[in-house]
Length: 230
Image (cartoon, rainbow, N blue to C red):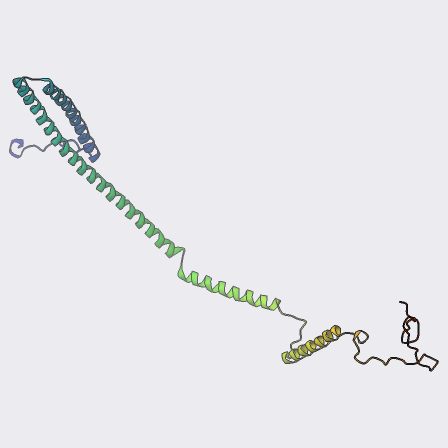
């Protein structure tokens, strides 16, 4: 039976991860760089020999060897560039996988948060309860406002007072205050200057005679006939 249908192949080893593949390619590139460096040293030796060699045959032989070294260097450089492209593709694929995993993780977290939020909205946070709470708060604020207005009332003021009478009384009080201020600012009568002065007496009090006019050199007297010090 095994000869007719063949045997089932045994499972092979698991494929390497992208990180392992990138690391392997990087190791191969490093080894190629070492070879390229060694070939650069050989080319420098041949270049120095060409400067010092004068024989045409010897120069031709040195040029041939240098050409072979240069061909190998170009081959290694081509391989290194190819490996660099492969490593870039591997790293890009690895980055894509990591981005996809991060996206899946983000979506899973958002789904869990959405489910939890729905549960909270359904069980713990109901719109009817919120509306009822808002109405209760508004009613309480209205009651507080009424209480404050009641406490701010002036109980000493009667309710039957007419505001028009109060305004008229206030105007009368203002007129009285203006009259008082005018009286306080007025100058007393004894301090006011009189425009009509009494006439100068012409007789000595009690004698009936005329007031003698003081001659030059004589002592001066006032309107009452009394001597005035000079």
